[in-house]
Image (cartoon, rainbow, N blue to C red; front, side):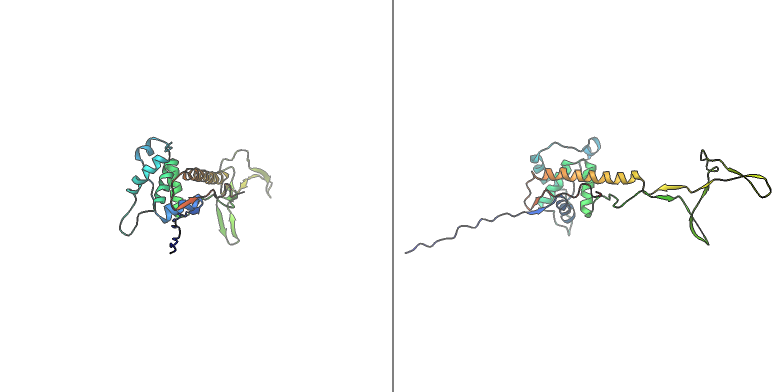
Length: 220
């Protein structure tokens, strides 16, 4: 009699979906509707930075789950989504964590003002039968220093002083506005880098955060 040969037991392998940090955040806050745990005292009295390790994050994971909106018609977020929210909360200052979460929830990035260039534009316009023209002003009336009326003789030989006309202009957008938008992008990029590093040590079961990042300076 020949003994029956049994196939080796099949071990269930746990596969995780690879995601860049931005996609992981959008999945956690947008798809799974995870929410941040707001520490009222810390938000008012401190910067929001914490030096806790992943052991503390694991303990906070359960606490965050009790504060998620589980009203009728909405299921609880996935455990990985709750853990991602906890990592964001404990890695970034509160103002940065809320910005990152809000952008991820909306599937957006900071507006770095693509193709923006400072342009000099008239302050006001006038429209007449000849079309639309930039409105001018009298330099002397506006108190512009260094501009004096130009003397000349009219047809009768009388000396008159013609007003110096100019077009008031402004920069739109201003270089400061463009620089602020680019600075906001760099801040957001740095926040994502910090979260990416923190998530590398997190015990995520469904996803694996890759090293892919958005471009650091998309404006070139």
